[in-house]
Length: 124
Image (cartoon, rainbow, N blue to C red; front, side, top):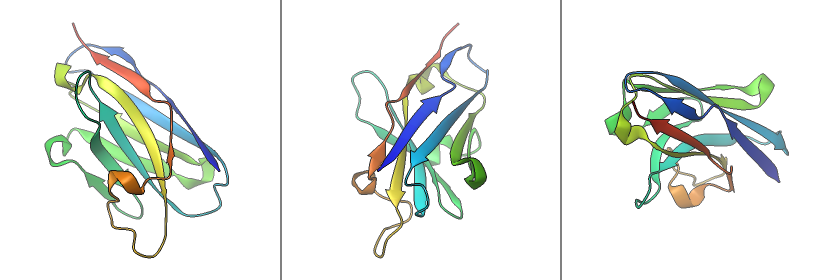
């Protein structure tokens, strides 16, 4: 089992920045692809970014969001810049166990573990 805990969400003005963190604990010795998803009110959850050896991003977010990981700290980060009101959502961290046949980036259904989410609100 792996436990994921997100932090760093909050209220930010349009144009501002936030950095989300996702700390993993438990059986973290296995390799994982780490991902970020988000869900806005009334919408389906959508892919934001993932990282294994290389990062992958939703096309609409390239250039504003950056995913990174610190394996020594079992933590993955999402740096979000030039935030817009439409970025308002609950942001979820997820982990997909590396295994034969896993696509990169993994499909949403391939993620094995999910955090509880952290709210990001972009508003003036």
